[in-house]
Image (cartoon, rainbow, N blue to C red; front, side):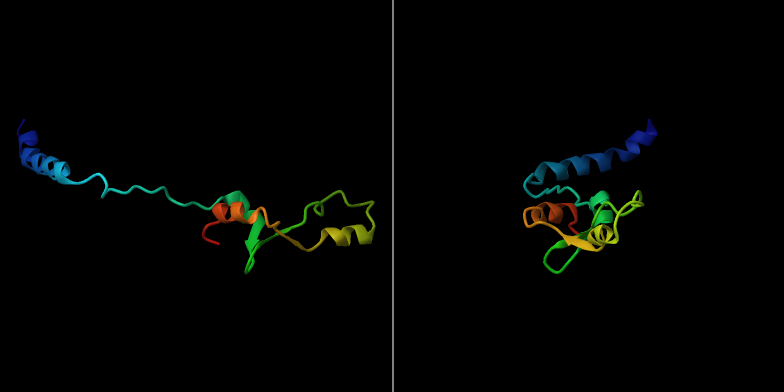
Length: 92
C-alpha cells in the first residue's frame, strides 16, 4: 500500500493538468508511409514517375529481336496515375 501512496501526488497533478488542456490543442496525425511495393517498381522523374516494362524476364525464346527491343527500356506514368503515385510515394 505504501508503494501506491508514494505515487498518489503525482497522479493528482497529472489529472489536474489534463482537465485544463483543450482538446483542440492535441493533434494526432497519421504517419505517412511509403508503399514498398510501389517503391520497388516506380522511380521519380522531375515531373512524373517511370517504371520498367513487363514481359522481358523469361519465356522469350521464340521472340524476334524487334519484339524484345520494344519491351526494353522505361515507361513513364500516365497523367491520371500521378496523383495516386504521389500518395503512395510521399518521400521520393
